[in-house]
Length: 474
Image 1 (spheres, rainbow, N blue to C red):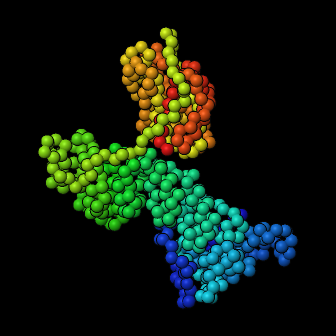
Image 2 (tube, rainbow, N blue to C red):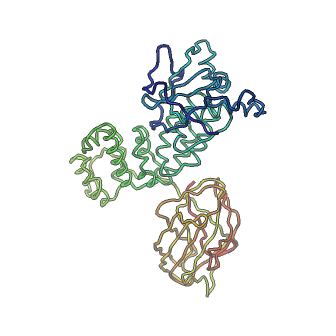
Image 3 (tube, rainbow, N blue to C red):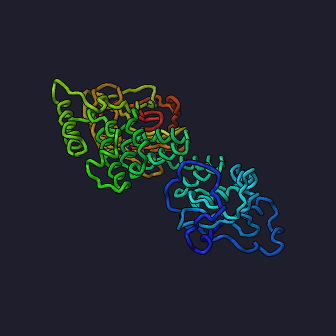
């Protein structure tokens, strides 16, 4: 049911009147986002003097009272000065749905004013909260879900808070994972934090290059650059840290000079594992950034090139990253004198998993006639949409081992949906192939299911063929 808001009385900036209070709760600071516009509250009787008869259930009648001036005995002025909106409500309905509202209206220090100012909650989020309290309906939007989570936490409405966290988990991807990590830490949501780390660790380079990374707070930045499991080249970490520093200088009203960037980064700069870069990466990147002092740059060059290496203020060891796992779908491999031939045809298989994983690449069979080099195009699709594709080469040694071919970045794969993995090889016509394929394979905590793909034009299927392995992070 549509609901609208009325502007604060008089059209002026809403300032708290004498005796009016803010809601008695001290949650973390509200997410900084401008409140969206909202429609105006109903002011008339719904359907004349006998409207109750048209709504036979309590839920229908309560829903009708949502954002309705009829019988309203309290008003909220919601939002910061200048954009605040006035919302009518009914104390009893709010009190039976929230212990905070109960204390506000019926506790020992009950609010006696008819108008209550709430400057730290977005109007749209407050309406979503009230909508749930009046009707049990939860209507979440991507633009306001964080603000709604804040409101649900502030007024202790756990069911709505859980719905917000669930919504965020389903929308979680590399481009917003760092920002959601910062919010999950702010709101003390450990499960959402864990899911954010899964995405950030596996798709670190995509996450670090996202716009959202530049919007995180310093403690979250420091936590990310300290992360041992981060699956990223150190040159990418350094570039991301510099981008964050430039954004932070703008937030603080500082010129984005090298000195100011170094200042806002603080100890986080020395969490970057510069010695774990290659000499070429350092020379073309960090050494020319001007963020390092001349002494630091000189010492790092000596560390790369000299036998007697100087002490450095940066961690020396590479990050451990994530250990890739392999789902092997065949129980045996074989070769015959006239198989396995390619000639530009596609080998393809469909698969599904029972939990979110990140597909990093495919394991492929190579030549059965000695060493051989293959050109290969690997691809991952869902419902015909290409999610990742890479054209590369690999060298096989003539054994029946599998040879990894990696996508540029790991691809997030959701549970209970079928994806299509394909490979088109160009090289030696005589190759190993798999036999005794399995329709279901258990890999640690992840179960893979396989089925034949209509894209396969070279004989690969569940029972045999190419693409013996899926390489993944979980």
